[in-house]
Image (cartoon, rainbow, N blue to C red; front, side, top):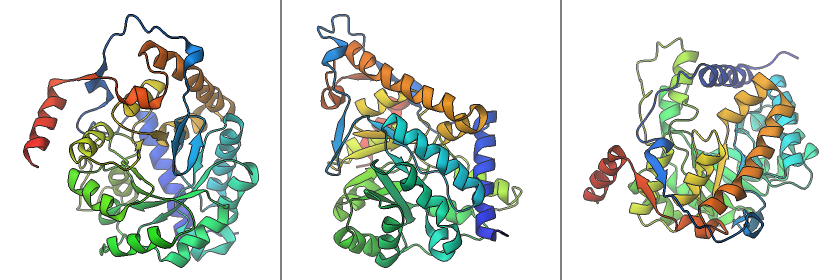
Length: 350
């Protein structure tokens, strides 16, 4: 079957993203996880068996505080990737999000690249995915397509403006309000790698979604991906634009956000998960790192790495003296001078 231009674009996104991760050719934007240090805790006074690593949000208790973030779907190649990822999610008992399903709404022949996820993981927690401009009918269809437990509605103005064929008009708030009020499953508002500011958190708070995915920089960079697709000829260059995941989580604190947070963007190891939770996230997710591991090493090595993260989480929480996620969120941290400067400037801007 000849695939459409949109299917080809999905494959291009996949290929370029994996290459950027593999070559470590992504720019460092703002504060990273290295700018946050844990305080030594010499006397934990607890056992690893005392730790509960589960986390609850959106009316669901997640056995593990991380999941496979939205990556792909929409072509025959990405159907194979989604097959492998969904099998891994089922075996490791972690949640999984699919990539944007907009292509499946336009091209029914490619729906199988998304539907396979639920077939491989009949009882797992799955997240559907659409852009913030989609009407309620599309949202319901995307949810039904994979029998989703929740849906991520992504906000990606920066990506669209860099994309040669991208959108140029962005009126999302009223549409999001309607979807949140009427959709049958919890709604997560998600950035796609450019982070969120205090003003953004305040605007989202007024919408009252089930959760916010900060989608910070230093993970998959769609500005670079789209410019590579266009052979770097696009005049809009946002390669160094945005707030990192660390900065976005701190922005949420400054904005006094009280909605559950999901941390995505550059999470490559269990220490990044711990730090994200300490900075206020209730759940974390990884996309680019897991994709690169899968493509370079295979399905079994990625599954083994996820198991290693699951084994390490209660050990690190024991080290820090935290019996659960809520206790971990209350643990103090040290910020680098660069991050302290960021915090001082952002507090002053209130």
